[in-house]
Image 1 (tube, rainbow, N blue to C red):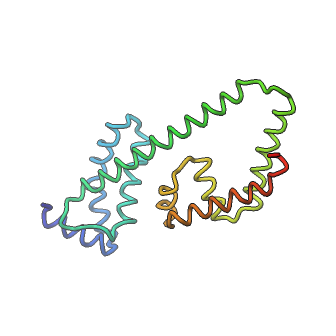
Image 2: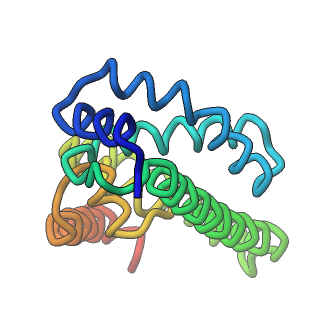
Image 3: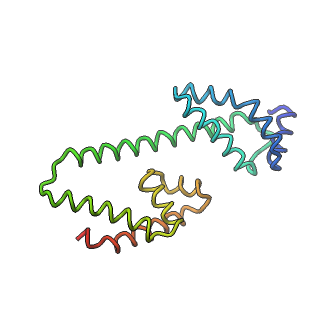
Length: 183
């Protein structure tokens, strides 16, 4: 059970009281940072994740249950952010490995290398010129940053179905505009 002063602070934060939030931040930020740093051993990243956990807490303050303790709640948010970080790093590593393998394998035909470079340039051009801003942002988060559809939906505050539809539309435009490079 949470003490009454913390319970009152949480109730005030739920009502968007930024002064109550500041009190919780000042009281618990250093503890959360140490906890995250212990897991990551990277000071800058630990600082970013600790602050992002507090930011998420503020964004989702309407879900606060003032009778429950604050620190385990924000600590769980930080733990999830750490997991998301490792997932993104794994995706980036896989892409780096894949690209390195493509670079290390000499193309069977010199024309093939030129064709791949032209396709990459065409894709960049189509993404910038033909995709609407929201569609472009979702496509880049998915294909470049390696985020999952649920992560993108949560980050942008939209439904998972909207993310799926936007990715479908982006791929449809890319197929149409890049068809001469694919065939």
